[in-house]
Length: 519
Image 1 (cartoon, rainbow, N blue to C red):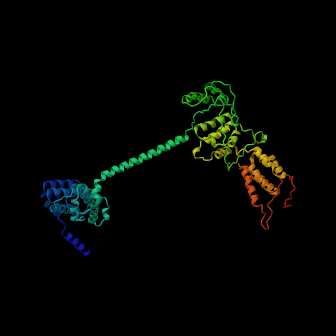
Image 2 (cartoon, helix red, strand yellow):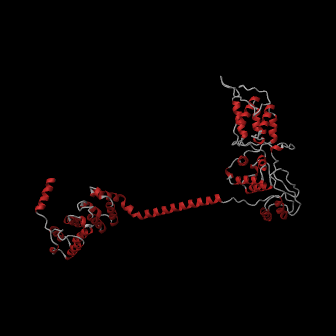
Image 3 (tube, rainbow, N blue to C red):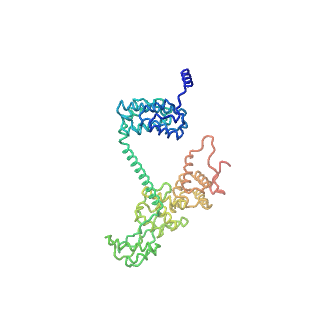
């Protein structure tokens, strides 16, 4: 191959191609000469086209010759070194196309031909790169399908494709199977994609609107309807329960006396006027009411005691007539404003009257009015439909406000009186020290302490007092934990161990006969 190449070069050197000057091109048709003049004007050299190529142009039809020169003019003439050879390839391609038209009777679509000429002008495609049979097959497609096939072919990197005829044949094969249907449904597919995009945008807008509404509902203050209170019959008397302090009022017409009675009980004037304005509407709706009877404060229904609260246990109230010690807190009388707010919760359906027992209400009544209002506000901020044990939930809120649940003084005194004398004395000394108050320990812890013997009980109290109780809110539970550990060790220390009972002194000698094993 190398020797043939050298021989060809030597022959060309001995017999160089005849360069025809621009002035000697007179045998071509006027249209061809006009096109050549345009090429000379844009940079084609006067002697860059040899006489052989001019002779080839003369053999072509005038339209084909002009088309070949037009393809040459679309190329970058500055980058083409052998312009005669480049024009020769264009002429061969046109001759091949003309032969195809004569043999099959079908011509390649002008758009495909223009695209092919453009690729040839850029040097991406040579006239012999695509077989004549492949071009015949391409001409057999519909114009839009053929154009689509050739555009796919032209979009690839043709420098990396060696068998361009086979590559174009593969594209046509795929189009024969599914191409026409895909082409016909292209508009429908585009419409479906547009509709899907619109649906996605609408879905995003709906989600954003839903989030905005949720944020508005979360930040919007909770609004409750004005309180409405049932009026008892004319023979009814004021309630005797200790949760609400009822004010005695003279027998006056109901509608006119309600605002004054409510204001006297501490209810705001606006709320009292709203209640008075709603009563005629309720009577018009057919609700049974007395026409003229003295108003009584709302009577809270006290259900039967329910199960105790594990986290903060409560205990039954002392028997009637037995007054607890003053050191255990004031009597359980709920302030009128707290009772009115609780009544609004009942009326609005936020909580049922039977869902809070009297022990929780006793604990709520021991708070100051403004603190009780804050506790109820915290309760209203929660979705109570998901809270099963509302007693325990309200107890937890009160524990955060005060740090402990109020205990039953009488029950505590009864449990403490059953302890040994030395343990009772140790408890009093612990309370006098100020580190723990009587309200911090409930009857459950004292009952657990009673189950230990005297030595173990004193040891549990010393461990309890020696601990850091600053951050411990449930001190009763902490003491119960110490008692349970002492019970677990009641069988005695391991073999060779040391007794675990430390000195119990509370800062001074104890009042009980006890000798430390370490002395």
